[in-house]
Image (cartoon, rainbow, N blue to C red; front, side):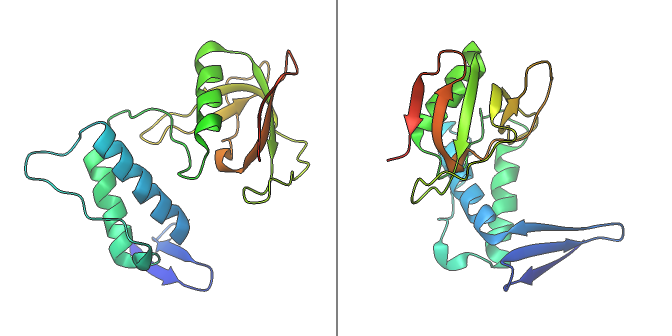
Amino acid sequence: MEITLSPKERLFVFKATEYTSCLGYDVVFNYCRELVRRIKKFDLLKAGQTLTPVLESEIGTLAQYQQYKALLAIIGTRKTGTWFDFETPTKVRTILEHYRKDGGQLRIFYGNRKTGRCWMEENDVIGRIGRSTGIMQIPLLIEAGECGGPGILDSSIVRIIDADTREELYRHK
């Protein structure tokens, strides 16, 4: 597989014989930061193994992509809990995990994470919380009667309401 850089679009581009795929520079940077956090939290380093710092100055370099691949190799097939975006507020993480474990339906409002302004999204915003499979188990929003659903844009949540009680659980500043 050939890996090229697309600085204008800020993407790593992967070309194989049957497909082409992309992964954003900022996504790789944030995944690296989260992988390092989890490796430390779960004490996954072997004796003598060290972690290289994740540097903003290396965003968009093949060196940072290689660092990402090396960090994934350290995690291996271990389950390390629900995978949230690095910028997801702790309170949002806590609410989503609570509802994933204990049930109940949520109404999620997405918006600008800096200003808190809601996007007025109407689709895929009500349901129970589930989790995907694999190494990076992201939170899912599952509609009533369904067994799967779309991934939640957890770092872009600006408000959360309990769909049954209508209690507001979280609101962006």
